[in-house]
Structures are given as structure tokens and as C-alpha cells.
Image (tube, rainbow, N blue to C red; front, side):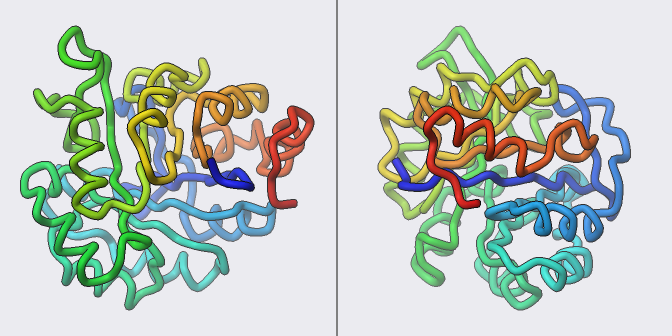
Length: 253
């Protein structure tokens, strides 16, 4: 586990606006990504994650101009995901300010994409984004694609292992079942991923209060990611870090 736990706001972007829903459905407008990024940077976010949640569904590339305008406003690591299908897409994103990239659907369709990105840019650039649902089969969890809309038969733990072997440098583990519910992170899922992972695990999906973050770290997360609780203003980065620190978890202040 990392010496210091990272707190990462997530900007789920569609048509140039930050959106949020419940279980990846009924998306509603939450604001301008550049303004929110600037605010989270000021609050002390350790990193930012920018996910173009409709790029794969719409079969288009990530919105590069929004990424560039966001990167110009923050001076912390920026991870960008959505619509990345080639190493050239990664090069272009780095050119507009992305530090890391998240891959999901395209890597499932063509696993060699992970090797290609890791070989060219290094594992530290590559985040495997897993949108995971509970299932009666396999380990109890399967991977979904297209922003959680399409369920695969791919076991989540098996896929994570393969991706790490191919060169993924981090796992962004998002529970579709918990996403947007504000009922807390899926601690079982986090613990299972921690057991099989030799790389950092980022927990995502379900944060509803400052008290929800420490249990995710205790379950094995190296970083915690949230969206709606920050976008709505119900929590600040500082409040989350203060709660984690009170529970004995080291954070950057």
C-alpha cells in the first residue's frame, strides 16, 4: 500500500460538461469541467481524473480541447480516459496535457493495446479502468464496457491480472452497483482486487460521506476517487482528508 493515500476527484464529462447519475444512468449536468478542476486543485486534490463517459458509446475520440483547457488550470497529475483506442491517441493526449490515460472498452476488445501503450510510454502512464458489476459467476464480479452499459462475461479479477501482466500500472476499480448511490464503496471488491494486484488500486463508486473513505483504504485502496459528493459541494477535498487523517491514514495536506 502507498505511504500516502491520494484523494482524486473525477470529472465524468459528456458534451463538454461534467455529468453524474446513479449506476451510470440518468446523467445530469454538474458544471463546467475547467471551473471544477480549478476548484479541486485549490482544495488540495492530489490528482484529477477526466473520463469522457460517452466517447466510446458515440464511437469518437476524447474531447481534446476540454482536456487541454483543464490541464492548463491544474498542476497535479491528470488522468484522461474515454475513447482511447491506440498509442497515437495517448501521444495526442499527452500533447494536450494528460499525464496518464485510462483504458477500458478498447483494451477488452483488443488486449494488445495495453502492451502497446506500456511498451511505448511506460506502465506509469497506463491506468486500467474497470467498471465492475456483481455476478453469480466466476469471482462474483464481471467487467462491463461502454460506460457500464454492456456486461461482458469477463471475470473482473482474471482481467485485472492479465492487464497487470501486460503492463497496466494502476487499477481504477469502479463499482457500477455502488456508483452514484452514496452508500459507500464496495469493500469486498476492493479487498479482492488488493489481493491479486501488484500495482496501486484506486477505489471508485459509492462515496456519500467523509466516513466512507477510510474503510476503502482499510480494505486495500491506495487512492480514493469520488465525483458527485465533490460536485454537489456536500464534501470538500479538505474535509475528506481531515476525516481520513483522523482515522490514522496519511494524506498530503
